[in-house]
Image 1: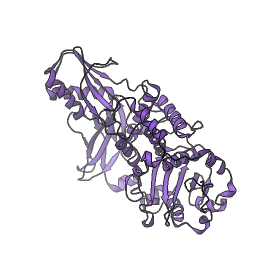
Image 2: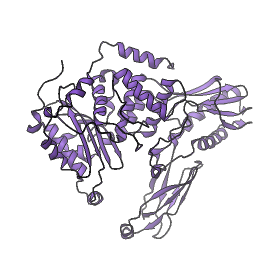
Image 3: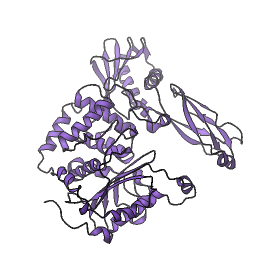
Image 4: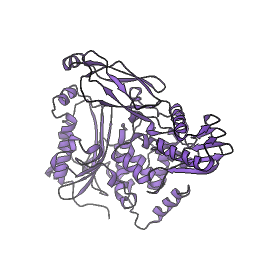
Length: 504
């Protein structure tokens, strides 16, 4: 097992490595202020015209460690980073923990009571808790004479960051991040709509899921749906109680549904009652949430190692893991219960102290980028990307990014998925309401690497829905397809800015 001192030892080893590449980010700040060294305003205007006039666009592309960018536009405005913020979170995680570090959940004996000490594992499952309870039974018998105490003090504070859209709370991508996290705080079910038109579709959940879901969903014809513009909606009726409403088409194939747990404490207690019964263990006392002193460790479960957690965060854009890791950074850096506030402070401090990246003039409230309150500039995201690229021999983060047309959130992105771009872009995507972002690396036709940041906000074209419905190219797709194809081909009007003037 890795000790708590390992993250600091790991950082010292990285800091002392002779292979560590130095990058002058302050130099980049100065160079990028000179518009005369970039592609002309008219050059970028050609790409800008692909988007609605009302959209706000920032773009920056440069060769790694270059004296000047190839093209940039509006790189200091603070914009919602969406999931590209996960690049910031991932770098802070990697600068703190080794690739093999794990987060440990323990079952401890404390007098007549038993303690389950939650350790920040985003992937803890019921079977993991069952295995620990069975280990207790094998050693101490089938009775707990005291209480079953749940110590989740590794985290505190609100399970949701400020600025989370209330209408998204029912979705599992918005599942609450809590010290008490089990089954990723998500329950899977399905909507059955094979009944006749006018009937109510039924929600089916696995047995005994400690969650109640009611349905008023009407089964309608396609004409009725198109005329009324109705759709499915899930609303929270009370703690872990949902109402699914709206309409759906008749189909023999069940529609998968996923519901976020709203009250993790109630959910975990209910699941533990079921697990105690399954293990045939009698509990004399109660199941309580309580901060406790350390007991005698009877069993433990390790999370996946950091490298696997980071891969899930970057490749699959796992929001829950990102937010829990932010809180664990707060826990580690400040040696107290982690939360969104001290986690965000820890990220900024770690990047400043260990990578010389200054995020003072940013506003970060979570680790996933799901909050609409987050604000980061394209220049700041470029510095994060440039540092990762320069130090990837130690960080091993670039290999975890989605690849255009191949993997993760870039596998089916139309703007980067045309034939000649397949496999040529590694980037973190970012989307929330009206925002389309990309941060990553493009390999040109000649094999030259280019680092880029794209931040498009207030993207609200009136014809977007019709274009998507009819299978026609949307404006954001046209913008991305054109600009990344031209960069890949090293278009003549851009190659004059690709001369080999790099830092020695």
